[in-house]
Length: 259
Image 1 (tube, rainbow, N blue to C red):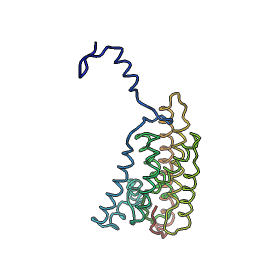
Image 2: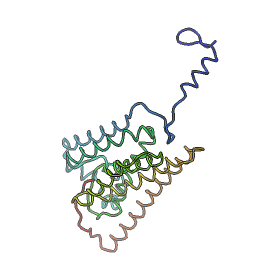
Image 3: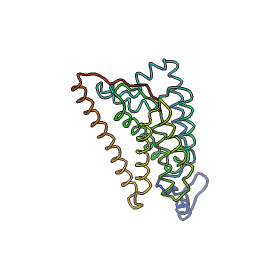
Image 4: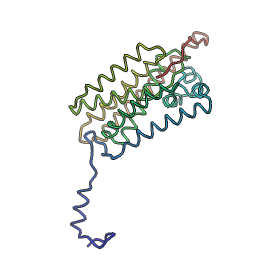
C-alpha cells in the first residue's frame, strides 16, 4: 500500500492515476494550458510602460529607448531593438496593437504553450526592429509592438495551415494591416514585414518539425532564426559604419515613425 493524504492507495491504483494525469500535449508539441497568462502579461507590460511614458515624459522616453539606427550602429545601443517594441507613440497606437494581441495571442498561446509563445513573440519583435534598422534612414526613430503583432498573425496563419484549419480570417486581417501600413504615412511598414517574416519562419519550424525529436528540431530551428537575425544586425552595422566613414559622418534626414 502507498500512503496518501487520506488513508492508503494500492500501487496499481497509483500507477493508473499517474497515467491518467499525464500532461496533455498540443499538436505543435507544447504543453496544454488553462490560462493564457503570457498574453495578459505582455499587454500589462505594454500598457504599464505607456503610462510611465506620460509620467517620465513621453518624448524623452521614446528618444532614449526607441529604435534609432544611428544610436544602435554608432553608439552601440543594441538594446533599443527590443525596448522600442514595448513603447508606443499614442493612445490609438497602443490600443490597436493591444487589441490585436488580445485577439491573436490567446489562441496562439493555447496552441503553442507558454514557452514557445514567448519565444515567438520576442523573435518576431526583434525581427521587426532589425528590418527597420536595416532599411530605414539612420536618424529615423520608431517605436511599437507591431513587428511582434505581425509575427503572431503570420504564425497563426502558418500553424493553422499546418493543421488544415480555415485561415481565411487571419489571412484577410494580415493583408488588410499590411495595406494600412503601406498607405498611411508615418507607419514603419518595414517592421511589419520583418516581424511577419520571422513569425512565419518560427511558426514553420515549430509546426513542421518531425514528431520524433520534435523538441530538438524546434530548438535548432529557433536558434537558426535567431542566428540569422544576429548576422543581419551585424552586417547592417558594418554597412552603416562604412557609409559614415565614406560620407564624413553626415546623416541622411529621416522621420519619426510608429509601428
